[in-house]
Each structure stands twice: as structure tokens, then as C-alpha cells.
Length: 115
Image 1 (cartoon, one colour):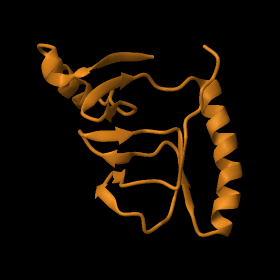
Image 2 (tube, rainbow, N blue to C red):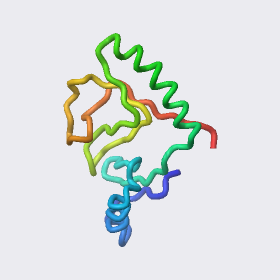
Image 3 (cartoon, one colour):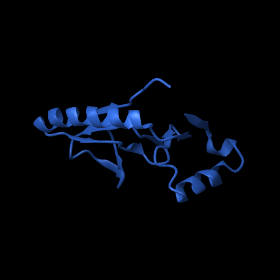
Image 4 (cartoon, rainbow, N blue to C red):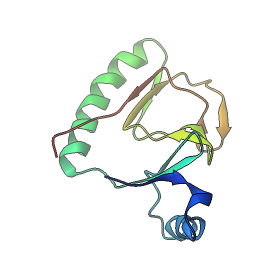
């Protein structure tokens, strides 16, 4: 569920709330979309199970052509424009915008389940 979809400076106290989420480790799946912060909850067990199954199948195919698979994965530029897709397929030499963020991915998988 997305809780916030607004520029940070548009809501008083939002920057402090985001920092508190970060310090508490609650921001693992949060994203920045073109400068707009999105608070995202973690996945359900069913979501995680499907990600494991699909990630396993993708890994077999990706390894054959020299690609890597990770789940979840950070793609983009931290605190500017980044996504956290459920699964990412990428080249091992993909440039990074920071230690935790890939500049791009060959494939990004976002699982959408009922509910």
C-alpha cells in the first residue's frame, strides 16, 4: 500500500518522518519517483514465495547469458529517482549510482497479486 505520494517539502514534518523511518529500518521498500517519496509496505508471504519461484527460474536463464538476478534490487539514483522492483536482472558490470543502487537493469519484475 502506498501511504505518501507528495514532494517532501509539500508536507510539514515529512522529511523528519522519512529520517525516522530510515533510522528504524522501516524504509527498505520505499522509493523515490522523480523526486516524489513513496512509502511502501513489505510484501506478503505469498508475494515473497512467488518472487522466490520466479527468481529461481530467471536465474537459470540469466546465468546462461552472463546476467545476474537479485531480489529485491535498487535501481536508479538514491533520493532522486529510484525503484525497488521485486526482482531485477542485470549485467554484472552495470554502473552503480551508489554502493546500493544500480544505474539500470536489463529487466525489472514487479509482482502484482490480488489484495
